Length: 230
Image (cartoon, rainbow, N blue to C red; front, side, top):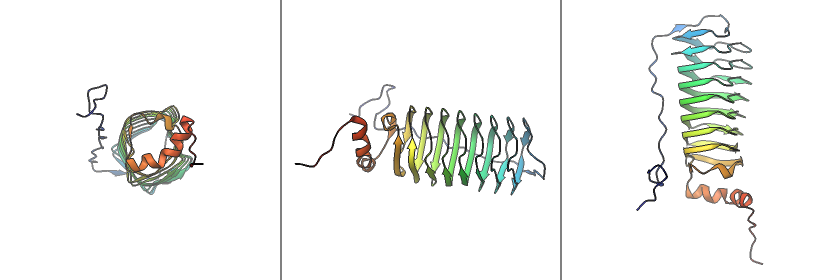
């Protein structure tokens, strides 16, 4: 018999993340205006829009598409992105701290130093592209899929990850310090590299090959010395 987890589920299973199901309505071009704090943006298409340095703190984006937009140093703390698709966006230092992303797809992004600390992500698909130094400290991720993307030194410190999957995804030097993992599927991460927080892997699923790769890190965490026969 399969061993049962505390909630009665089989310990050999992992609950799959639910992906967003987006059907955008007909969209209106955004035009050449600038973002506004607490602005409301409904059913708009941002195509090639330069949002560099824009201030959209607390803004709401619903049923929107952002395509090939520049987001360098864009200030969007506490913004809400709902039923929205971002394709080919690029930028360094985008501030989405304490933002809410629900039913969002982020495709083929090229981002660096994106601030999502304290954010809430629910039913989010991040597909393709590369994100360097993603800050998700103390954030909450539920039903999030990272697929076919490269994450370099992502910081999940103190975050809660529930039903999160990494599919054909490179996870390099990730920080899981003080993170809580529930039904996190890491089997599709190659490479799977943890800089910190290997002790937080309870609640995650890894493959036998990944276990071998992580053996040196696990041994160091446990204080085990591994020596060849003398």
